[in-house]
Amino acid sequence: QLKNYIMGIDLTKKAPEGVINLSKGQVINLKKTGDAPEFDLSKITIGMGWDPTGGRSMDLDASCMLLNSEGKLADPKDVVYFGDKKHTSGKVWSTGDNTTGEGAGDDEQIIAQLESIDAKYQRLVFFANIYQGKSKSQRFSDIDNAYVRALDAKGREIARYVISNNSDLKNKYSFIFAEVYRTSNGWEFKAVGEAHDTDQISGITEMYKATAPAKKSWF
Image 1 (tube, helix red, strand yellow):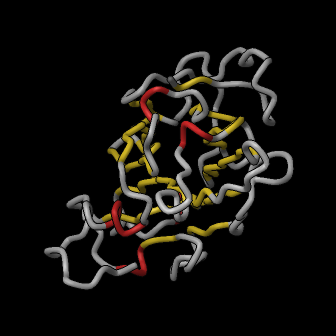
Image 2 (tube, one colour; image 1 turned 180 degrees about the horizontal axis):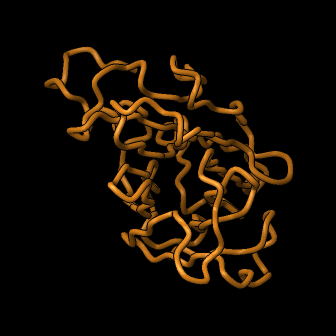
């Protein structure tokens, strides 16, 4: 279930008035409509946070794919992840790789300057996986205080997806949590919430590749 809260990671407080509340699969236009707040979409930040569980460090990785007009991944360079933290365009980047979950606030962030991204990119897909989750027997259902959220350029929270205790993610190692895509009216945001069994980045990217899966994975 998608929920929104105040800025920060305090999950006990209610969402501020005017913040967009989403449900799984819901699509919203991120431009100002009616009495809703006017979000600054010159930049969007996807932040992910979690805490170590039962004394065990857990390494969650946030990644982003830049897709073409056909919704396909044309080049491995169009994936921003822990091994390649900045897109060649300079318009999408990761703030770093937190391998433990230690610390307050977002542990990892992917930032995208939507309004200046090349027009050949029509869709950005944001996903997460647990690094070596299978070999370490670590699943999303094992993680404490885990969430993913979207913020505008001024740091205002647009939406939040709560990972911990989410039945859709039980015994899963990766999931696609959101995508933004161009329309004639600007960028729109879709909450995906699609869980997968793979703990590998390649397990997600292979589903979007423009060419037939190769014998050797890109990642």
